[in-house]
Amino acid sequence: MLDGHDQNNVSSCYCLPRGWGIFSFKDGSSALMCDGRVLAGCAALLVLPKEGAAVSCLTNTASEAMDDLAFQLAGLFSSSLLTNLEATRKEVEEAETSHPFSRR
Image 1 (cartoon, one colour):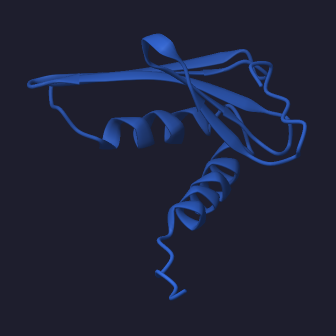
Image 2 (cartoon, rainbow, N blue to C red):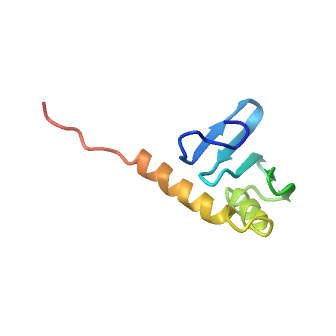
């Protein structure tokens, strides 16, 4: 949900139009992220509504590591953010694990 409270007590991630992603964690906290890349640079904006904090990362190199850097910096404002993010990553990886085809 947009307010950061998931009714099923399950971590979730929503992608919204215009590039915003919303992470709703089991503990009721949330993170909003928007990022982008071009050939010679990238930017990431991470907002933590509960903590009233925002982190912006800008660089002159294009790298997927920028999102992780934004989360690492935001972890200074939220003691549970990195733990919540890792738990959500594991849930997503498990959900995306391919299942072998079964014979009928």
